[in-house]
Length: 110
Length: 117
Image (cartoon, rainbow over all chains, first blue to last red; front, top):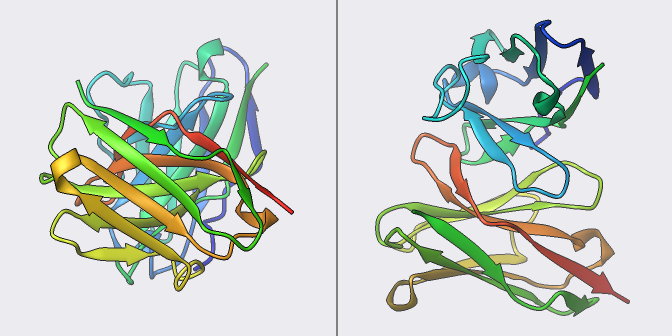
């Protein structure tokens, strides 16, 4: 199974909104509403930010939102803050009952 | 409060078997699916596989044949064995709870395993 495709880096100024894309196929992202997003700060374990495409776990800021269109899922961070600077990974369920991660995106707050 | 903690050797010789254990507290091993994920230094995340307490497993096709995940109900632990390791298996290994809706909501802190030649 091939990793989902994410941009290597995305940047924005404080207060701006940014969107990270996650492109797969009809066998993963496009076929199921089981896309999740993770935030990872340096030398830390990943943290769940979005699950089932749109839903936020308790305690995650509502500045983070998820969406999906066709084979591409997206994570939008609005009102960008310095603490949002981190790596972000998407993940999707696949038709083989397996899971595949995205290539990862480094978010820089300018 | 749910906590997961990886443990095991930090150094494994090439061609040998990597073994890690994840100890779970604050949740019953009999209640969820359990997964291993790894991250080579400076690289992205890779899903290794999952196990249900009933013994049902599923593995990443790229690792199939080398990986075994087991559950140890009496100890509230689950484990990972990866055979015939090479330098490419050097990574931080994470254990996590795997929701039936395909996401990981609780993670361990990670355990660095280095494969030496």
